[in-house]
Image: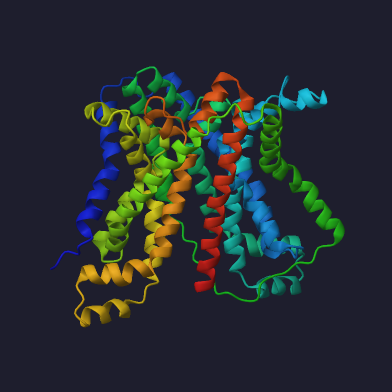
Length: 499
């Protein structure tokens, strides 16, 4: 049996993706006290934050999914973009601005004289995480709602059910999987986030791992990393078992609310959107007006662009054989799934593992090359998924015809496959680029000495208390993240059109 040409490269990528896990196991073997009192407190804080965030995201995301799917709104597409917009802002930016705005001496207190509660600890972290993760629940639930046929609700109404009863007894039971899928994404995001708990001074796994790393306790950092990965691995297993296959499409349900009902919806959800989107933009704009452009070194933006561009190029070069291997057979699909493991590893965990790897290979330690490897391992699945999707839509008869006419496999790839899948390759590279620009944890641990990016500069000014200097990098990251959201939403619309 002939082995596909893409298999060796795909196998190598899969083995590299598993390397951080092996490194952490080796490091953790030197650590003691796996479950001491402090560990249990960290576990309790992490699970509490995850639970509160999931609950908050459901309470906000599910009603917004109903509104965006079923309610007849003026400028409906615009509202969908607004509801999803918090995804365009990294949660650590939200944490930074909410921490700076609230509390005694905060920006709101300074400008208005009104003293507001401080934002820190479990409550502050849960509020921030909820504000920036509820769109996950909204989008997956909305997708499930749009697959339902309005005739079911009409039949229930005919049998005497009120609209509220129809929602709870007919609609919600049929979209539970969509809600669960979004909730698991929220849980995974919460577990992997470092910036929000760190800025809110909450000891979760990610924050304590960073503290232990800075204290040169690599063994304990690795042990905590493995504990976090066990939780992440369990959630990934649960996620893989959730089936969200849509039902047969029928006539969509459309509700026409009164002006009073529309006003009530706006009053209910306006504070959420103002806190998630309006407040960060307002705070950064205030700081920009106060401090101007002179305090920012734009070479930092170039550093981010340069490192992220290289990571994007490397990721798509590796993604092409992995994606083609996944379409060639079962072995290829297994290798593809292994590369996805890197995306499930929190950035702080990946950074801890690669720091040790760099110490064993001095020519890599504290180099840009090691940071690029971290970006590639973290975000390779984004490129693989995009390339694979575009390759799946390629007409196989074109490849067969070229082979019949005498073209070699290399000629077929360079003259047919590559040009026709270029859109997916570019989209994958763009997503890797944008995520690398936003990455904070791995960059903090692996960036070369003196090499600042937009995200790490934002972290440094937070630590130093020079909040005004965060305006330009903060606004740049928001714009960059908005571009990423636009790419994802355009890809979703294209897929809907093609299917």
